[in-house]
Image (cartoon, rainbow, N blue to C red; front, side):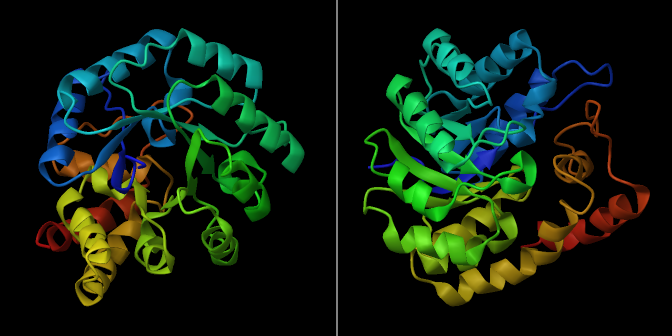
Length: 293
């Protein structure tokens, strides 16, 4: 059975004012999401600003998350890239103690075709000692993992799910219709998680749930338990904040919100910068409503 269902948290990397990794805040965030209902953790995903972290910093982030987690929840580690052999080498060098799976993004920049994507992920799945979740996010990588390719990859015994962030409901429905029973679809977009679960998705890898973990996980549990009316209420209650935290880029929006909640400092590494003053004020004004859910 796939461990990665329900609410997964795409953990941010908090920074100090001098841009060093703020391990104290990171530990606090891990405890915050666990105590408020998260089902699994995602380390070094897109929201972590992983492209700006050095290898030593990546190790520090993972070690900090594992230390704070204390084996309470499954941990998914972001391990992807556009050089297949380099990803395989990274997998072979990785200590997977405390890590239950990897999240691997569609190769970016060099824009492989569907045959290239299939061969890339099969090679990674063959090399990985833990289950692999595919990550399809065309808006970031420039190419789309098509439904037929995803379903073909789902036949691999070590590929257990896909994080679908294409926003293409027809494509996602095709995957849900055609996939094998032991392969799961996870939402990669907070704002459409509830409708995707109504269509058959098994959960989400969430940015929003870094901050307002309790209402977000309550929505996911309501969907899993068949409490559709309550899930829909929460979906619409969180809709505005879900929009605001992505209005000026991710993770700029979620870090702005979390800084206002006292969970981290509002510091990002270039080329990312904090949200503009208008979005910051909108997030501040919307915070009381979201905190009262």
